[in-house]
Figure 1 (cartoon, rainbow, N blue to C red):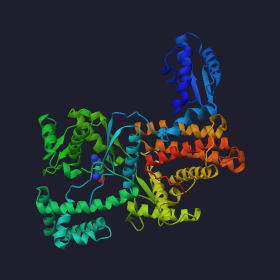
Figure 2 (spheres, rainbow, N blue to C red):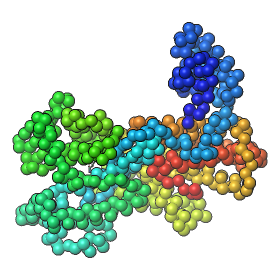
Figure 3 (cartoon, helix red, strand yellow):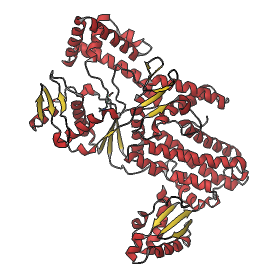
Figure 4 (spheres, protein in one colour):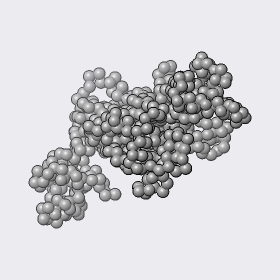
Length: 586
Ligand code: ARG
């Protein structure tokens, strides 16, 4: 929303200089380091066009702006004109818009008319959602919200890994042990049930060739569409989805499409046929490969194994054609760990070789690993802890909620019952999610409960607390002033109030950056700055009664409340976009 501040200045100067408004607004930039100003206008280009020295034009512009009544102080410094807004000027430019359109700071129209597909989470079925799945799931979820806030039409896609030889084994095990749907459905965790079955049958297959043979037979039957094999596969899939839905429910994550790998099993023929017809394939030791050397790849990419089995890359190509047919996307994101970089580079290149119109619209959104603190070993571990056991995402979330419940009970004993539960869940889960999003996604993430749950520092609870604090001031204001006095923006004069306003105004740029670079951390950083400015502003009132929102002068108080509301709704909306809840008390 900085444009609300800069547009009147650009318009005024454009009139004065006889140039287009955009010719001025495009030049406005942050001031040089160490310069105490809000913006700088470098005068080189404008001076050249007028045929005057830049410092002369800078002085002229300073004079024009200081006489403009636009709530800005201008000082020429060599070829630059540095601009400092008055608090009242910023308030008058921003607060009326925010009063009628509470989330305006976190909306943009850069994506209007465009469609993005976001493939995220995409776990393999019959396996647990492990702690590391938080990364794809929550980076993807945050990007989906941010793109939507920037007016992209968003398709959230969960490309389930629901195909492979593991299912032949599971079916063989199920049959051997004579298991029933009831036994699966009454298990405390259906995926654990399937995992355990898989471990038992794999062990049996190791010891007995006949078991291995049975598993192979079932795999083949499944591929050939045998009714019994398919219906058992469907049971495993449904059971896995029920467990996944529990976790997605905790995280508040939804999807528009669940078409997984199995869906594409019979849709790869056309892709393979086309590659062959275009002369792009070769047979290499019985396997079908595509030669990508023209695009600088050292090795060919595997399309089909020697035994006829198709591969991950071939399925991704078929799925991409299908998505383009369904959605005609302008951009398609794959939120998958950096370990799969080569896979994406290869099949993106293959799409290019095939002349796909969408080849340049594909983006692999890679990310680093997550390391969790292991108390017993006193070291960072990669997803395994507590005696080498794999950390389940649900268990981490549940432990975070338990710990948050204790913190909330201690900090605010008045909150009880159902409300305490809701807040504990928002804070605990928010802590885990924010820890994952606050740094650039390509780095590795370290997770430690105590750190993530702190109420100070760069944490989710810190942002949520700033929001709750603003909500509480609003409640107190309404109690004190049942009929609210009129706000008068000229009465906002404090520099810390201006800092809060500017932090709000910068959020739109942070949102646009998050979208353009597929980096939720850009927005997370903007929200931390806003919460920091809010904390300094509100803390000033601890020592100085006149600085309080609820101060003696009702007019000033009402004006400050307009700022409280703007900050509260911007923080609340920002939290929603990155996938956190914003409780009103905590
Ligand atoms: N199921 C895969 C895995 O767990 C991730 C799938 C990512 N998406 C894709 N279109 N390849 O590794």
